[in-house]
Amino acid sequence: MRRIGGIAILTALALAGAVGAAQAQAQSETAQKGRWIHVRVDEQGESGAKVDVNLPLALVQVALEIAEDEKLSGGQIRIDHADVQVADLRRMWNELRAAGDAEFVRAQEQDKTITISQRGNRVLIEVQRADGVKQAHIQVPAAAVDALFSGAADRLNLSAALAQLSDSERGEFIQIDDGESQVRVWID
Amino acid sequence: MLISGKLALLAGTPLLLGGMLLSADYLVVDVREGGPDGHHFVVPVPLALARGALALAPQEAQRLSCPQHAARYLPAARRMLAELQGLPDAELIKVEERDQRVSVRVRAGQLVIDVNQADQEVHVVVPLEAAQRALDAYSDGGFESADLIAALGSISNTDLVHVRDGQDEVKVWIW
Image (cartoon, each protein chain N blue to C red):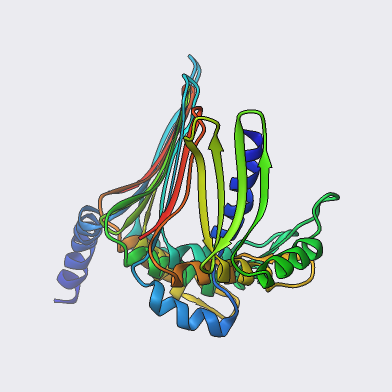
């Protein structure tokens, strides 16, 4: 669950973006008119939380512009973590991107298999149980990941990533069901 | 003739004031403290009179300055309000946990925020057009108080704020 959660958070970072650079913003605003991002989280159990978010992308963009603190500024978030350096992630992504369609990671655990691959300009992250049931299916346009890493050295460009994401086709980007909680993120 | 005119004016003034009070919108603040010794205040402020009284108020009360760091968010806030005003009625955010519920929705041109938990309740309504009008009143580093009151006056019969914390309760509404 923790691993899936981590993957979800990383991908959510890519999804959560807002307006990109000023030029991209003007173009994407027209395209995004009327587009909404939806997030559903449904945790099982008596104390499980249920979250239902439905927001117009344009509104998310403006919110990201407004939101500003020491970590978030201009739609870019600074990652300040000893184990995770944006520069390393960016370098890793550039190498993976250059490799084209391929499976980058296949991690076999006792009861599940985790794969990360690139297929047809999409990054796919899948977690599959030993019995074949998919616990997580995350697909993000590679262009959105490019945009995510287009920010300053130690920052992830959420704005540009969301602009890219919202310019791509509609549909579900994240689907997680690990038996304890369900998470879905989609744009329509 | 002059004396009868003055008498008419004297007699008419209370009627005029009464008419203004009856026809005016009121901003009503209702504070109720819990407990056996709790106080209960209800302060109705007739907006029309408040506008008139501003003319007699000291200069510093006629204008509210806006700190520089807040003012720079005004363009973005205007855009956000414009976006919200363009939305159909919808629940934007809903979070439910065992003993807590949060809801943010757009309803009939208003942003409605509700937070409910065990012994606390917050209900806030932001009439979007009035909020936009208030923001549009910004100029030269501040707001004219009269413009803000006018923005409030554009709201009718709306519960703006209701906060309940245990037995304490605060309500603000336009009547």
